[in-house]
Length: 373
Image (tube, rainbow, N blue to C red):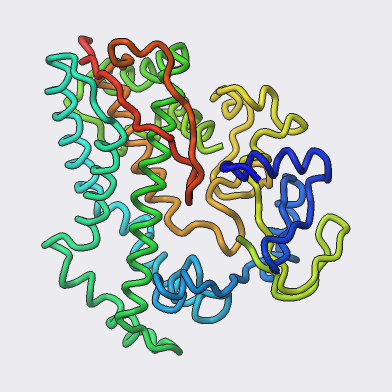
């Protein structure tokens, strides 16, 4: 196994098939590299069976005995916790409440980039984006306006709904840690790769810029900023994001793809391999946002070939927040700036490292050039 296991597992899948059993230590894993198998394990007949989670000492230590949403086992506690988060924290209404925070922080980022553009100074865009995503989630969770109210929401919800479990401070901390993990690093990493791919494909960047600038700068009223209402009209930008983003455990014995999967087997989806399967994607190794214009797949995992946020009961509850933030930041970076490589850099290094998400090995350093339109 190499340092990039998703690549090694795809190579093995070419020999042993899209469903293969491996053992990591004493634990059996089934590696899924097939869109059809993903569709099967998230359908209504299998979804509950594959919604379990293992008990890890690391998740117990970090997430209050695995009482967060990501690592808690499927059952009544998990259902109640997800419902609370979806209604009280991550609903469309709640996401909209914090819209002003996102727009303020993006405005701050644009101001910093404008200052750098005056001297054609290279900017560590990785650091700038990471700072933005951390600030947004910190202000939303702990900002003065919402601090007292938000921290008491858990106790209020328990009292009003008479939950069957004790919603403790440890549960709140574990859930907040989920929010930070899902609302900072993953969003920042996605934006890094969006900009990396666009810099490597200037024709695609120009097409995305033309769409954004047409909506923002060339209407009957030229706007001084981008608000989230504009994003819904940016169809090509959404395709760029989709193109960029291109552990389940069984709770009982089950069949998958015609094979018997024993109870307790870990089932891991290699989405990286599925998104590069030549049997379901044309030019799978190329950056082609137009594929999503021809086939407008959504992010909700309704087809096994495109499940960047998971599917079924384990669909990521933070999907709405993530998409809003990624699209807003990307639109601003494309609207107000052109982008160049630093002096002396000929080709952008696209090396990756394996982490919770696939990250760039080196920070993304680019020169912002203020749009003169």
